[in-house]
Image (cartoon, rainbow, N blue to C red; front, side, top):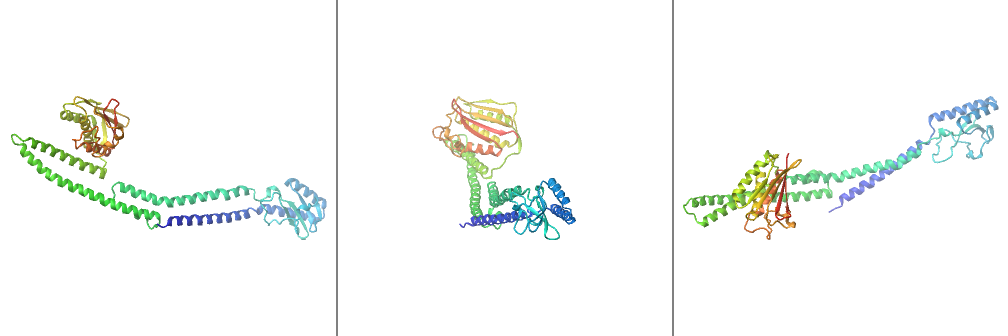
Length: 446
């Protein structure tokens, strides 16, 4: 197996991170540069101050120039001076040597202002004679980059976090998309659509996921073929078994019509009926497990159904008593009379079969908010705790508590559980404190 997915992820992550950080660095540099210049309005203001100072300077009225400088300094809370190119103070306060910058007394209004310096720069507005300038300690209100700290945090933390989250989402989608496609294929296959293929859902993708899809398709094809063969085998077996059984039934009817049929004939007749029932139950169980149908077709009056089943059971087991505690009515919607009847009959027969002669079987029905609960309690030996969940497996037998002369025991509870599941019901087993097995059946009302 190649590491195509690993290489793709490495390439995507490495390339994405390089691009993201390159663009962020470029964006930060451009933003910092753009925020380092004075605004157009502040440039115009400084230039107007320079023109006004030059006008007063050219008029020769030094006192008026000094008064104007004092007024402007107070208004802007800053420092202003008119100086010559040879660092000679002409008007205003004494020229401060720390503001002298090489060949310039200050910065031009078109130059960048460093955002990282604590002190504001001195701005120089040269006069027309090129020998004299107005020097202004830049007022705080004109200092560019007021929001640079917040902008820097945004560009270095918030924006990268958002981009990385977006990259993580893309990687998540890239990985989860084939997994979801496999999930869809698995769900369809579990519903009985054995023709579903996961590779078709992957498109032109070629990596570990596509290889997994190919493996899934091979498994699905093999299992589909096996299940199809199994269904065909069951259908053929049903036909092959029913035909000789039908002939046997016809022959037994002729023998039973004689005045004195032998005991062997009677025995064969019983065994023939038992075999027929076993065949029918096996086919029904196979159909329920393979097809998993939802038998929700009709409304069901549960109390009436139980009354009929109890009457039949009393006739079949005259040596036992059935104690019934039933409400006047219990309606179950979207159910199946046949499935519910066969399941309840199997459970009730099972309880009577393992209840000693003279003992009673209890049948209780209680209504809950959204369901009807049915309890069928026998007085038999019960089942060991570790087998309470496995007794619903086909042909399961507990040797210490169940006889070995019943062939239908292993299918009865298994068939009941599948039939109840087909009508959205459930069945569980538990041991009673005083002995006996309690079967709890829950059917939704709607």
